[in-house]
Each structure stands twice: as structure tokens, then as C-alpha cells.
Length: 259
Length: 329
Image (cartoon, rainbow over the protein chains, first blue to last red):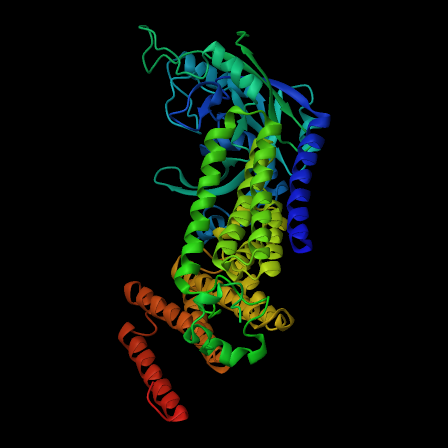
């Protein structure tokens, strides 16, 4: 029996550590209100619907990955500060190899919710264009208003700098990109490749609320809607952000339009 | 006489006949001991390999059943119930291992239960982390690795220890990337840390003699397989290395290293008398040669000259080996 105890205690210790870490993460939480645009529902088991379904919300953000868009928030100074080497000019013969070989970095990224950074995208939307949204194909929703605005190795640094703004500071992976454009020439820039926590679990009590409200089902398509006319969000999500930067769903309620 | 927990009726004189591996690595008194394997067909002669294979397949299927059950059925439950369920499954499997061992049931059954215990631990740790919205980190690899080693060492399940060695290799190798500020999953994109850790296991395997010859063999062969996979990837795929050279230069460097490394490993395995290890290295060499035949990159040596050189070297080695042993191999 003593042989069994070592393995069992190791496992139990791991489970307790996970529970403790999650509890400690939530002891100092900040909240931010997002909408269905930023956190659409993912039902992971396609044939299971309703309160018994495995439901999570998937992060849907603007990646700002085009070179000129990216440089607006990921300047050379920021890229150096988060650990990238930029010593080789983009026009140098070995630049492509140098930048494609550089390792991606796991850093903290501040995403601003419906702030100044989204304004140009909103104008583009008003003119009939659609800013590119990564994290899924066309899902009929309005574009996400969660826009990356800053990156740093220190979470505290970002939180202090963006204290007055509705920002979500979470881990993300940034990689260097190199492109030899036929007209504009060689170009080097940084780009978000993945958001650290791509989905958030929906607790059982909130899952039941969402099921009763009909938010777990596909949104009905009205006769006026076409693929060019995205539908507005149906719900708001109160998202908690803890000490470790891990997020959780605090509440989900009917959408209150702000603009 | 009992055969490592197997029913006495299944022990034929053939089953008890020591195999090559044991002849060269263990003294006769260690052939049937609490630390010999129940689930390694090449190492333990006491368990028929069909039973070992069935226990591995059954264990993997049971783990898939557990993961699928948790994924589909438990989602309607509250978090405490989900965590309790996920915790209970591996614990029950561990109790099952102990009960089966105490009742002297066929060890293949106990091995199956052990596989479910360790696999259930992997499922539980990662699922609980996901349910609690904790980010996936390489730290999550350590609890299942430790549980796997504890269960394997306690009950003599070699395959389980082998998977734990693989998990530990990934966990150790990922430290270098985390320390450098890169995501830990880069360990599967740049292979040098995995290669270095596997080489460290190879060296360490020689120090594991107190655990028994079976464990030395298990760690050495697992590390050997890892080293060869890493060498094949580094010598065959662009962009998998950390070296600051042009991709073609890096590939050529690793191809030279693969030839030297595989030759060295083959000679080492021959000196140790590990025929299975030697076959493993031989298989890796064949895969390497096929890869070079399909994708020949250097202009320094023509392909035909390289392959002719390898063929002549192999012929010379075969002739020399035949002369040493006094008969053709």
C-alpha cells in the first residue's frame, strides 16, 4: 500500500496546487466588459446542446498584423524591449534568414476595448469595408473591438501605463515577420501569432442562463441580413482578469449598446 | 515457481528461458524480481508478448474512454463535481493496480490498470487546468511524469516508465525556451534542447544500475530512440535548428553529425551487446539514407559517391564483424 501512496499523494498534490493557483489568481481580479463580438460561444461537442454542452467562449481580437498597422503599436523600440534583435537592416542580404530564424516571444499584450485604436477600423466599417479579424472565418458577427495597443515583458508596467483605459492585459506570442514586397521592398515587423488563452470556460450556472436566453443556439438570420451586414452582439460578458493574467467568466447578461 | 505474477499454469520451460538481453545485461538471480517488467515483451520473458500488447492497447483504449466520458458527460456538472470525477478515476485505477497485485492476478491486467492510472492523471491534470482557465504551462507536465515514474517503479511497468521518460524529456527541454522568453511549445519546432536532454538520459542510464538491468535498458532505449528521432529531424527538415547558420549549412552539419552519431551509437550498442538497440540504430540509419536519397543537397560530394562510400563501409564492417565472431552475420 505504501507504494500506492507515493503516486496518489503526488497526484493529489498536483490537483490541490491547480485549485490553489486558480483561487489565488482570482483573489485580486479586475473586471472588463466585453461582448459576443469579442467572445463568441464555442460549443465543443457539436451534437450536445443546451445546459449539458461543453461551452466555452473564444477570444476574437483584431491582430493588426499588416506591416503598417503593426508598426503603430509594435514599434522597433517595443520589439527591442521585449527581446527581439533588430540589428540586421531589412535590406541586408541575410535579413530574411536572420528574422525568420528568430524565436517567437511570449509577452504581455494590452488589448484596448472599443478605444481610440478601434476608431479607424470603425470608420472603415462605416464605409462598407471590414477590418480583418483573426481567430475564425466569417461568423456573421460584427468585428471585434478588442485591439492590441501595447506589449511588454512586465504585466504591471502595462497595467500602470493603461490604468485609465479599458484594457485587457493577457499573454500572447509575438513573432518576427519578413517580407520582400515587389514594389515596397523588404520589410520587417512583429506580429501576434497566438493569444495565450484562446478560450474561456463558461461555468455551469452561467451556461444555464445562456441556454435559457437562447444564446447557445445559432443567432437567427433576419431577412435584412446579408453577409455584408454583420449582426450585433446579443450578450455582454463580465470578464475577470486575475493576478496571473488568467481570465474567467464572471457573468453573462443581455447586451447593452454603448455607441 | 511463480513467474513475476503470471499464473503458474502459463509458465512453460520456454517462457523461463532467458533471452539475449538478460544474458548480457543481468545476472541470473535478477531475472525474476519485483523490478522486472510486466509489460515489456523484449525484456521480460515471463509475460507473453501478446498479453503485453493487449494490455497496452486496452490501456490506451481505456484512457480514450475516460477522456471522452469526461468531455461529454461531465460538462453538465458543477466544477467541484467535475474535479472530483477527474481526480477519482486515476485514484481508483491506482487502487486497482494494488488490488490486482495483492491478488496475484495476471500482471498484464495490473499493467493495463497502471496505464489507465497514469493516462488518467495526464487527462485529469490538463482538463482541470482547462476547466479552471489556467494557462497551459510545461509545469503541468511534471505531475503526470512523477506519477508515471512512481507507479512504474513501484510495480515494475517498464512501458509506463518509458512514457514518463519521454514526458520528462519534453519538460526538461522546454525549460531552456521558457528561460529565453519563448513559448514552451517551441520545443517541438527547434530540436536541439530535446536532443541534448535525450543525450543526457543516455549518459544517465548508465547510472541507473541500482534500479535493475531492466530499467537501464528501458531508459537507454527510450533515450536512444529520442536521440535518433532528433537527429533525423535536424538533418532532414529546414528550420528545426537553433544554429545561426544558413539552412543548407545547418542541414549539412547535422547530416554529418547523424552519420557520425549513428555510427557511434551502433558501435556502442554492439559493445553493450544490446541487439534490440542495434536494430533500432540500424532502422534509423536506413531512414536517414532514404531521406538523403530523396533529398540530396550538397554539391561537394556527389550522391553516388556518398552512397557507394556508405555501402563499402557497411561491407567492411560486416566482414570485420564476421571475422571477429567466426561466422557470417
